[in-house]
Image (cartoon, rainbow, N blue to C red; front, side):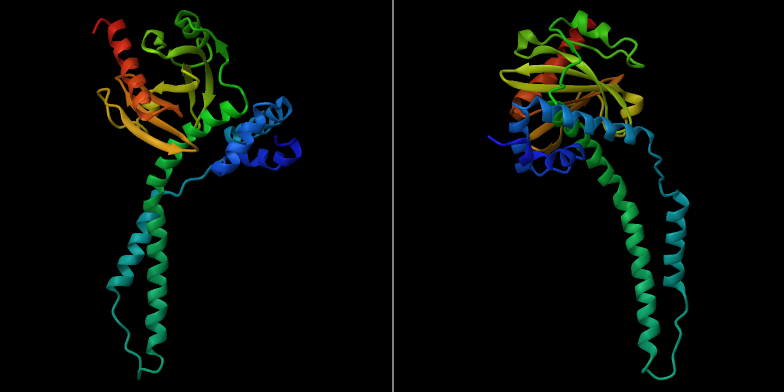
Length: 268
C-alpha cells in the first residue's frame, strides 16, 4: 500500500492533468483509501478551476495569418538579386530561405491550432470524469429517481438537461452534478453498469456546435485516454458526451438507449 509521502508529488500533477497512465493508476489506488489526500486533491483542483475561470486568454488575430501569408507571397515573388561572383551569393539566398521557412512554420502552427484544440476539448471531458473519480466527487445529488435529479439542476444551469431512467436497460441512475469544462458549465448525469461509473455530459447545442458537428442522433467515437473512452451524439437542442471505462459496445448501447428513451418520452 502506498503512503501519503509516496504520492504527495503526484497530487499537483493530477490537478494539472499531467499524470501518465501508470502514475494515474497508482494515485487512484491510494486515493481510494485516503480521505486526506482526496481532500488535498480537491483543494488543488478548486484552485486550478478558479484560475481557469478568471485568467485572461489571448487568441492570435486573423489579421496575423493574412500578414504572414502576404509576407510569404512577397518572398516568393521578389526578384532575385545577383551577387558579384558566387563567393557570397549563398549568404543572401540562405538568409531568404531561413526567413521563408520561419514564416511557413508560424503559419503551420496557426493551421494546426484548430485540430489540436479539438483534441483538447475531447480530452477535457475525460479529465473531468477522471477528476471526479479521483476526488470521490462524482455526484452532487444522489438519487435513482429522475424526477428528483432533474429539478435539482434548476437554478444551477441556464438550461434544463433531459434526465432519463435507464435502469430497465441495465444502466442504474446514480444522480447528477454540475461541472465546468472548457469554459462551459455542463450538466453531468451519472449512471452505473455493474461496477463501472458512466458520466453523461449534457450542454445546449449553440455552445457545443464546434464539438458536435453531426446531428440526427448518430453516435460517434470520441477520445480515448487514461483507460477511459467516450462517445458523442446530439439532438436538436443538446450535445452529449458519455465517458466510462466500460467496453465500447456498452457505451454505444447507453447512447442508443438514452436517445430511444427521449424519443419515447416525446411520443416519437
